[in-house]
Amino acid sequence: MKYQSKKVAGVWIDHQHAYIIGNADLKSQGDYGVIKKIVSKHHADHSSSEDAHHHRIAQEIKQMYEHVAEQIQAAEAIYITGPGNAQEELRNYLMKDRKFQGKEIALGTSDHPTDNQRVAEIRKHFTV
Image (cartoon, rainbow, N blue to C red; front, side, top):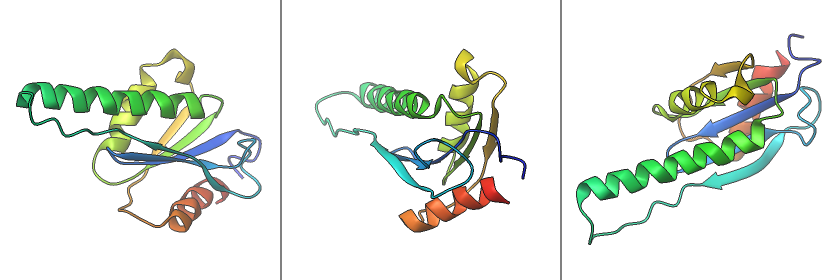
């Protein structure tokens, strides 16, 4: 198996939630589950301008990407999936970080699955 001796981590992400999926020691073998759920704190602020609102949302998404990066930095291979373009944005964010240089980062696409479906997709990626 390609990932047998590597530390692996999976991420399902959209612009509001990120689920870090794997097992506690980041091994490709063993039981997978949701290790951590990260939520972006989108706040409705009707008193600010539209530009300020979009800037604040962009900052909150960046903070979510920072939290995800902290959780998966020990992984050697990372699989990111989710709807829309959040997974591409996260990959681009990680590729700018020196801690992720030389690490394998693969992308997938999935809609809004259940937690069990998220875990199954990540497990399948790393165990096939």
